[in-house]
Image 1 (cartoon, rainbow, N blue to C red):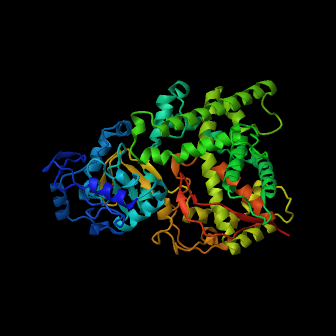
Image 2 (cartoon, rainbow, N blue to C red):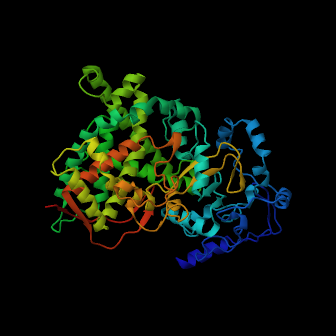
Image 3 (spheres, rainbow, N blue to C red):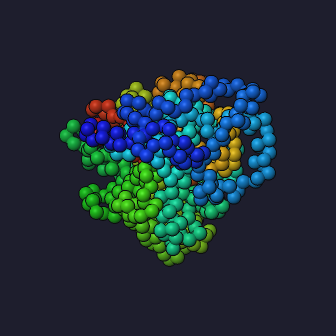
Length: 595
């Protein structure tokens, strides 16, 4: 393997004599032979990347008139993707007068040009995409969290990651103040960095089904706003959340009974326990989004059962997003095997959702809406919209994004509790105070009293954030960290990194749930920047299903740790990125009932 790597590296040697235009394309060369900068595994990023300028430190000084004058003599580089479809879409909402006004401000005129933002140097043709390529690359997709940390360590609080084939530049922002400014200044229709694979599926491959109703995932602008406004009220209503407390508690009780059946002679759960957590997650989401029990917790489900196929399809669709979008996007031009399977899985999702929504509609027609209790989420949407497709697409988005996200978050929280016995004991003591009888039914009031449990969840998300970052596609020119940033650039807010920076979190390297508590609850009162750790995002595009996610996790953790103790007695697990950031390895927990 080492000889093959050496051969591959030699093939990419290229002299640095070629001149580049502002878009990064070679326009002249002085030699016919292709040579390339030496790439090594020992050097994380190209040594010829620009070093961090002095004004790039935490507290930037104002640019002097001389610096501003010097800056105007440099060639200004803009994002090379501003002419693509994404930029064209975003720019349609931008008022040119406001741009002109910004360009006349002292802040803009004193800011450094976009091309001076530090970052890894792309090589000709392959840009920075080579870093994710097999054999010659430095990283795999599972290293994405590591890459984010390395970028911050090497280049500072703003980093430009350019030269990703088929994608706009990625602008990593490691400054909670600047992130807050970006969030607070966004309009009514913020653009998240899109998932081109899902966009292509919804807008081209299955345009026949989605038409002009594309949901909230991978959708932007006015279509996103219109759909979200149609489903947001029933999804986020507290009355809807309260309605599902009892049904989700029943699902969780069934799951814990199944866990007991899975224990071996050492009281340990099986190596594939993460799949059991996925079954619980799907059963919960199915109860909410499809208004039915799917039967995921039945014993001895076959690998080709519908329930397992749904889980496998969700994992495949989400866990290959990074592969489809960070590696060379051949799938955009012809159907690669990966893309073909992705489409097959998405079609399966659509069919499943259509089937169960159709069944729910027939039940609603036969029985009418419930008059004795709060209508279900599905009933509310169907009655309000008179359109099964809206309910189907809402369910599709909730299931697609929810299964793996919630499952991996639970895996991470359980691992942290199992490896922190003193803090697990604090959780248990709190639960015993609130639920003296272990068989006591939960209520919203009782869940609200579980302050330490919720603080523990938040601290896990701060230090081991399941979602490693959020982001926005900038819709207007702006100034960030003292640089002129053109619209169309994809700003990345790496919450996994900013949540562990001493500038924004006191004693950031210490796992301390008490930092999230109020003083009268035993809190430490330490500084915690409100925008340093935002696992659900912020603003208009904050996670639509966050209240259901919180409810499901809190019910499971309350029922589990009131009745059981969890231990992990094996080799410590590292964290890695699939689509989510979670423990990488078998979760062989020892589970024993409390006395």
